[in-house]
Image (cartoon, rainbow, N blue to C red; front, side):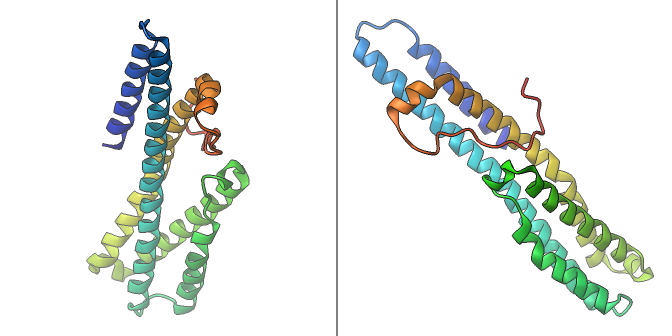
Length: 201
């Protein structure tokens, strides 16, 4: 669904810009219409980027919540080492603070640090949950493990979708920067950082 809306926004922008490129009797009206179309496209891209980002971050938040729930279930099961669980709990509490933002992801080290911490914690926590015989008879723990595993696998799909939209947005800015700056001096008209999950070609 998110891909559909993003594609629809881009298609509407393309149609609007093509129409604005046609000759009209009133040059002033033509320029006004082109400026409006450019701004509409700019705002549509911004909305698509924000939606893509929010979906990705919300899914990551849900994964972290599921990890907290899994730890809670493991604490209630006598077979698991309480001290080890407390260690994982501390790491999980620290995880959200490590996460990148749209600004800090320009530093690849920030993204890599978060990914390393997140992936390591997911792997260790799921391995621990599945290591005891009690796992086979506890459907709640089984379900949480599956939810976390599936969410972890979605991370790079979401990043690829985000990069795809941002790449088109950045190209749009480069092609229309002069006209856009005449319309607005907003600092938001800066190119956005990529996860580099898609080819610039």
